[in-house]
View 1: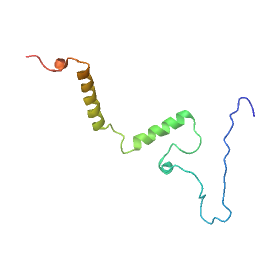
View 2: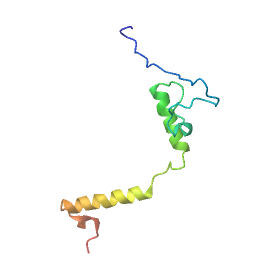
View 3: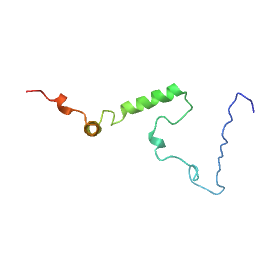
View 4: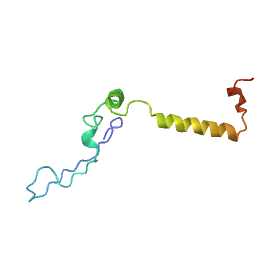
Length: 94
């Protein structure tokens, strides 16, 4: 136990004696682990961020969502009405 070294977590690899299946029936996994690319061998922070960005770019929902932009615009207008902001500056004077 050094002062500068971190303590590693213990890993228990329990295997039942009479289990004839493949893998470990008691293994705890997240249900989305097989779909993620960020899980795997140890990486530094920069490597994790780069893989997360690459995964985000290759996903189907990479573009901006128009519904979210419409909701944000409505909430901003409601906020401006609540604080009694003069909305006439957005219209042309006659």
